[in-house]
Image (cartoon, rainbow, N blue to C red; front, top):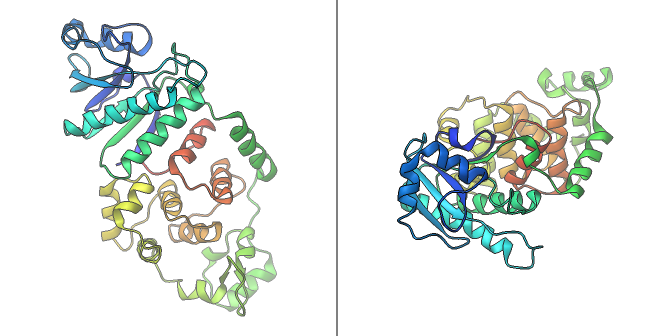
Length: 341
């Protein structure tokens, strides 16, 4: 199951459990800790008194009481002291131990706040990177719905270097209107070859097609495209999974896609996914830009320089970064739809 970044009040999230960024006493405090205790009622405090506190990086579980969850998992994040006091490992342990408790109690869903990023002073970009890294690794081998809950968009802060790099990439490529279809002479060539009209939606695709003859590195021949013309999205996806030597589970986990949705796609030859889902599979399969466009086309979509969402996807593919959780982190920061989920 996937990881989803959401803006919400964690005390109102419906899941099997929410995680409380607690202090070592487990007796309530400010921020998220205080909000959870107030929403849960006095019974939560009474149970916490029996737990004997909690060490930094560790986690303990209680009932949810008046909260809309079965359980609260309490974990104590590290206070930021500049990064040279084992903070990164301790923060990672918070997520690892909380997820381990959730798995031990057979929970199907869990919601985390961005631990230590408030009063404890952990830099938000570093806190987010650790959270996504640990949760992402866990989800590659476990089925669980994980929410990372932030109170507002400002809580998600990309590193200045990454944000600037993506912004510059967008500025260099973004256009207000779609560039249109192929030039008339190109359309004529494609028409003579009996290529369906949907195959010449975008001018940029021209650079990805070569006339028959010696293949250039990274290009697909027009003949190869014609050969695959009748393939549906489902057929192409399954073929690519086999060609990449990946398993179904590895594919849908890396795509941040729910297993049940993948099953629908596998069992329905004519299934048409949404664009974020189609792109998520392209990322999971580590497709290059041309291959991504081909897969999207099977679902009836294209990449356009008039879409910031599309340009951000192209940025990560160009950079060779296929970590879907990091991509979603960037999409979230730029207020775009997330992949998968």
